[in-house]
Image (cartoon, rainbow, N blue to C red):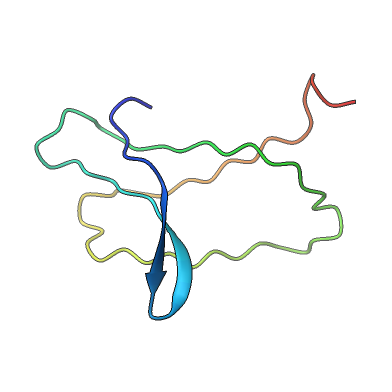
Length: 75
């Protein structure tokens, strides 16, 4: 998505985390997004847990996470 800042690695209270900047102030972007292609076998998983730290969530109305399972390039 145009205007979205790049993801970087940060450390929060001694724990490594992904920094995903959402800079809406003074920009024309309305939302931020990042894509990451990975190959994971989650068949045995019972769930996923994400910890989100956001110092100021006031400009954010919601967070969404999308997974794509399989596809035409899978063999």
